Amino acid sequence: MRLLKRLFQRLLVALLGVATVWLILVVFFDVADRKLPLVLALAATYGVAAYLVLPRVIRLGARILQRGRVPSYTLTGDGLPGDPVNVALIGTFGELQEAFRRAGWVRAAPLGLASSWKMAQAFVLDRPYPDAPFSTLFLLDRGQDVGFQRSIDDSPRKRHHVRFWGIPANEAEHTLNTPEFWRGSRRPGDGEPALWLGAVTKDTGLALTRLSFQITHATDGDTNAERDFLMDRLAEAGAIGPARSYKPGERVAIGKVNRYVTDGVIAVADILRPDA
View (cartoon, one colour):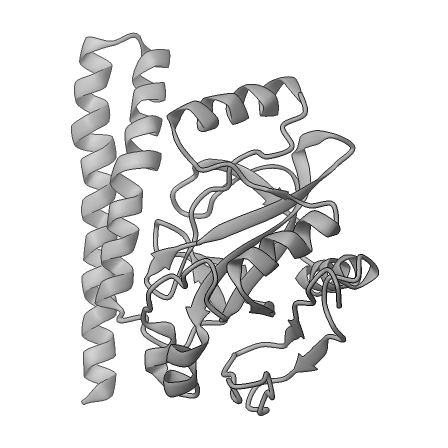
């Protein structure tokens, strides 16, 4: 029965893919080609396909396949695997911000039309943009709560960066080691003790996203090295206590919250106050 259900799901996704190709090439491009010069028709078709049609189709396909397992990765807006969840810090939001300030990292600006346009200009012209915005990735059924970055050679194309999603400590304690832990929670208050789940990666240039072909940053594949780089910088600044690395299935002692579930290795550390 389970096999038949899976085959049916895959058939639906395949039919969805065929319908999408037909919609883009036969319907939209044909209309655009009759009303616009070929170059503009191709550009318009790309824009509609990459930023309107394909993201929605991919999300629908992911929902059909019921991708509800415990994640080791964040998700993009298209429903595709994003950056890996590979760090966790324990402290208040204010302590989190102060830790990265001490390490020389900058908080990312909110994503919006103005900041996106500024980022596009900086990317094309290779102009510094220390607090450039991040695209939105999803974990716990919401986009990241905050992000920090450290540019490389003052270039907006290359940077170390990390996104964080917070879970109030008292809520995490009751849902850890269960699927509900990953399915959603409220953002912690600024002064509330919290577990901050992070996804740290290194941007290295320009790339196209899989399936939807949107323009985005290319990332270094060695996220383990980037995780270690981040923890080393925070430790050198005296912003965190000793980091502990945990493998899947291991119990994690992090004060009041005493267990943590992950599909991959994660580095966990307590944030230290400036006077610690």
